[in-house]
Length: 163
Image (tube, rainbow, N blue to C red; front, side, top):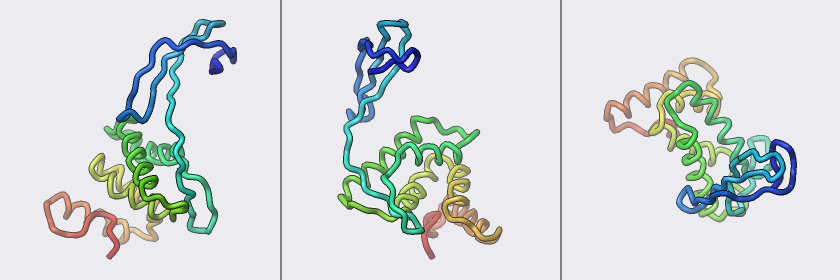
């Protein structure tokens, strides 16, 4: 493992721990040359599906890209990075369990939209405003009304459900 500080190749493992239901191993390392410490995460590389974008482009499922988008939606909100990582892990696991080689991007977006309201409703609205590409304020208000009805215990459709 290369040291991120001095780029030396010689590092030693100080501590290893399993996390995220055993799917990730966290390793605390020290550089033999500069003696600085850093953390690495080791995850089993699983075959993730290719995401088919709206315009027909295809790209590999990018966990980091999804986390970055969620971080923007959750900016200045009481949602931890661990919660976002767990949400993305849940989406990634569901995609892998489905066993499909290709998945439309809207399927990934809908999975996120289903899980996000339980984390933070404001983050949900922020994510929805980008994901759904609202054309005007009335579409935005319709989404807000659905959230309010759901929160009030109404038996209306879940936020983001197609009408």
